[in-house]
Length: 95
Image (cartoon, rainbow, N blue to C red; front, side, top):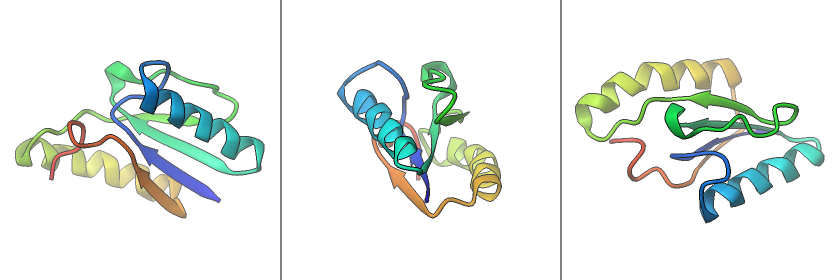
């Protein structure tokens, strides 16, 4: 199963990010296909063998959300995830 996780950051930053990294690792070990979308200035590569990380510029409002729509749509079309799991996105993805 392919699960696309969207979080403001990915890597060893704080509790939510560590949780996300652990979840992705566990999914990969169990045969899942975790994918992460995170801010490019706050995304680590993680374990390159098990997690693909796509950088996405943050969108804080309607105007920047329009700019983020096309790149996010390209990621969704390329990956075709079974599930999209939103984590901490309140300051990452606009409306």
